[in-house]
Length: 140
Ligand code: CMP
Image (cartoon, rainbow, N blue to C red):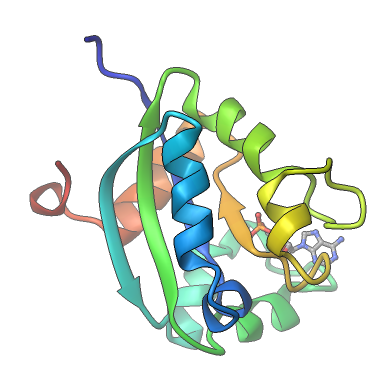
């Protein structure tokens, strides 16, 4: 089978703390994504700021980067045809109150700032974000 495209996801501290890692990974598998890399880690403030560099200067930047360091996260590279767009459909709108029924952010997110998961917003960012977390030796 031809190799699909990639997207990068993070299951955020709120969702990890509430025991949602298993349910979220199950839905990722059921939706046809292949996990090509995965790790469990806690970001430092510097790492969170580097990951979200594009949002520096926005009103929510400090709260976002602090929240992302509150506890461990799961980071994973997902492979599928049309991975970026299909994963964004699976996770739903950034704000859980606006996300469609059945989406990961609707099911498992608390608020726009404490949402459950991250998904890359373009193929270019998917590559940058995958390189942020994983070396070639960690991808399968
Ligand atoms: P994420 O997909 O991780 O990418 C950037 C994050 O910033 C986003 O999820 C939200 O958690 C947060 N975010 C985006 N827009 C807003 C906003 N308008 N207000 C607060 N937080 C936001």
